Image (cartoon, rainbow, N blue to C red; front, side, top):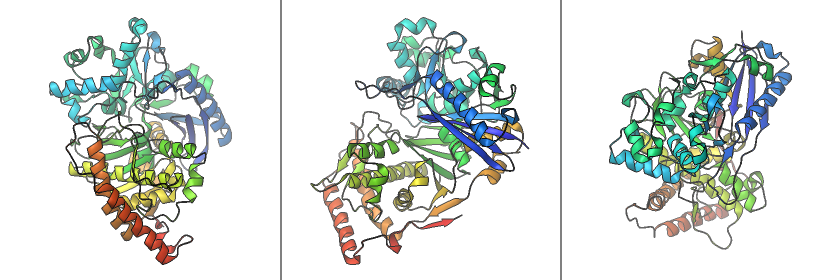
Length: 546
């Protein structure tokens, strides 16, 4: 029976969980690293590869210590990272600068040019990533780097996704031809698919900008799913981490995709990985085009199934920003909204504070709030923002189901749902679907599962999930709240599509403010009639174990 380590690189820290097959979690540790922003350029977000590897070393030693084991007992290490976070490297895979983090949107112009060229030339790849290429993704960021770093172009050897760079570093890989490239990363963010011969054609890339000439041939390596190995831990990194050299490291993937595995995703499920942003992960047994999603990629979640990715560019970030502006905390503001009913604030919040990832794929958008009056509070705005993320999720689910990706179960994963029962109940009501929340910590559990598979301890992902994944708490839709969200949703949807694109068809928006006021008055009348002064039975989150 093996002991393994699962590694999760998040936006601000790396987390390591150490598991024994029979005893479960033995311990965990984390270490932070800096996120570099710019006061003059809000679209910039970068991180240092060295900072992250130093944090990994620190966290591994602490995780081993708190687990009460020897590092030599660990039989496999698997890792996931944020995506798409990419770094340009020179000889021996030495970084030529910092990672363009997933939240870096400096490449908006490049993304628009790629999208326009793909549609003009009818390149099939654009349809499989939702019809719009994003500033968050690989080709956009690479082209932006080439345009803005002329002195480094001659040193450029290749560009590497974060998950692949960490694995290559740990395995001692210095030859770009030996890089294990994650199909999860390359399929969702680089328009890679065997259907059109892998990466986009050379002539297509050159038509966007001659700077891309020859770059396609530099994005080399072994493209593979996470049931195959990236390599084995090198002597050098084994010494740094205090582990045994030669242990297997499977091909990595994105955090949200492996978080979905850790949240016990099965065929027909959708997992909302809710944190600073939200990644929405689904699986299907067939490839089906879904306009506006971040990609439909065989093998990106479960190697044997088709992965579907969508999401929102800011969620927890928005909640934190509202609290920061109010000189408060999210927890403190949330206390004031414990008894709020659906639509009670009279506010309608479009949560585009960091652009729109799905289904509009428009980084130029900003947050919009309808319905302000002189008495609204920061708590009101926070509640409306939670509702806005739930209604935005409904837009995404609607798009998926309209295009042949049925949703049987909704699972809320990530860090926020574990701490916020009210949010889960709002999602259940706004989506009119039961929402399942893992009753335990699943961050890095997906990495643990793939580490166990690499060590040979389970015959399949499903077998590992049956043993390792925690049970669910279930939040059921509340009929009266569902009815109000069914009235609120058309208002949200009208505003979402009317304001989300400069080419949108005309929509009468005059119904929004009267509609919001009517719902708000109804809620206040209900409170007055019931004389609610504390939590009431009918409004408590409905939970059960499953």
